[in-house]
Length: 291
Image (cartoon, rainbow, N blue to C red):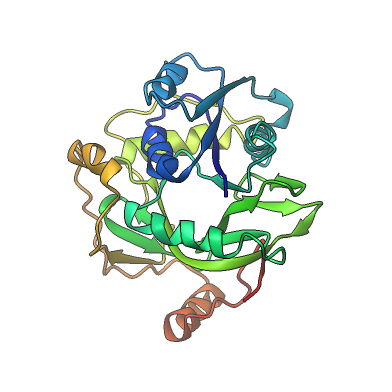
């Protein structure tokens, strides 16, 4: 069995993406790793080269300006990386620049790829998610956020990144996947307040062609109101994240017990059902779950 990792990145330094940690977290179980590096002015390519692994193959790309709507450029860059994976690869393991896998999950991930290698009904593997929020001490839940997503797909299928690169499809249809007992740790919301404001403005340019990025003062505040529930994280973080966590220089002072009061009655009702039953009515699922 052969496994390839793949990802895309641009301006990782200026936007403080944990791309080195993301790649390093799954590199041990990969035979090769394709990184589509968009033209950057901040040393992003050198950052990837600094990982210094013979498994890594860098693909230099130019982000297409005409895809600055709905995040389509993210899917395009993901597809470029996937297209450069060697043809003899069995499984392709996708990870984004703000995600990371715990080393304790790697044996189970390998096992699932091995166990399902010859089961052609399984076209991909579905991961659970930890969405860290505000700091490395809390995860957040919201019925409006994805709690599972595809991160491993078969190389030999006509797989394409879907919409803004959150998931994948095959010839436009949903992928048949198996849910595995492994997590993707998502750290995109772990930034100081001014960093989150900057991230939001930057991301908006890839969803709204008319959006403009402006300077964000260090004193800027951020409304952490888009999470329904904060949970104190009692587990451990991936070892590759240790140095980054040690450098935290801001205080996350949001009260995790504070109840939001600005949601509609419908949202509050659906949230109540989710809290009581664990069922998310109307949950968006970009996959077909099989057993």
